[in-house]
Image 1: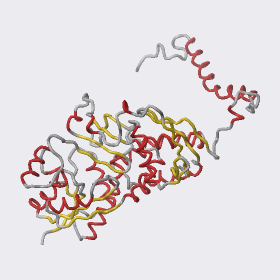
Image 2 (image 1 turned 30 degrees about the vertical axis):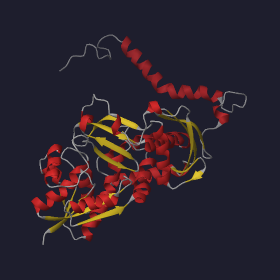
Image 3 (image 1 turned 90 degrees about the vertical axis):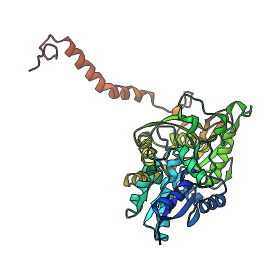
Image 4 (image 1 turned 120 degrees about the vertical axis):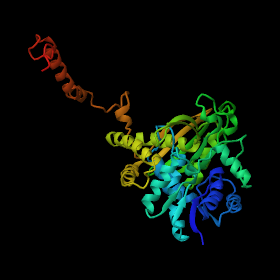
Length: 414
């Protein structure tokens, strides 16, 4: 009886080929595990595809709500954007997939788990580091990293063995998507000078064909998380989908960037994430209204660390857990409503209000209701600038000194 391996199965070219390759070359019985994180499509069709490719068994885990409520909400609270642009579409789903992968391995009494990542991608790091944290005794296999096939050769292998795949040389894109967005790679996109072709976009319309009239949306937040749109309470996952559909219809949410991968290379990455970007924009603006200055400044610095941890496969690290505790404490007063204006290719915050607002009209206004103590400002400014004033005097005195009398000029090296 062959040993078993649980394969993180996506239904794409690499993992479908991996099902047959692991059986044929490693003599392993493959359990294909597809974790649904909101990628859409016919999961039963994908399950059948894995069986047709030679899997001993194929299972589908519905993790959409778990992904939304345990992973995406945390990333939103952290305003997590890798390199200030990428909302961690794929990176955010990998630790959840690994969690179910480890659980399935124990259920099937499998010593091996496998993923379909290549040797120069980020996901190999995320899978293997996450699995090491969750179940260090499992042996992780990376068939796509080891078999040495190019993408064209993998297509040829699939055709030779009559494996059911949807990718063709005419449509060579590698696509990964979930509730939080969509990632597109390969093909002509590997040339960073070529504009992404129109046929790659699915969640965003061409900005030039956007409606002529702008749309307005009021997003209500409670403890840092969106809970209602235009006064209608919605479950988080449904709210994300509705914001994505509206913002995407105006051509908002396209990202075309040069990204620094974990393995040390730069790559051209293209994403669609209208819902994620719009909600992060609104949430961050509400924080400006409700968080004290030093707290906000510190949180912004740590948000970049948070995004880096998720991107680099360190979701299950003690630092990420500690940051979650910090961020949760910051969000207790992030309550209120943000009004956004959606136009061709853009989402802008045009209004914000909160019962916990730190904005006081009587302090900010310049009219007769002004309650700010202008006289106190004079002494404040003098004390605030005192260190620089003291330094400037000392510098001027030093510059006026003759050579050798306290100046660096004329000092010889010994």
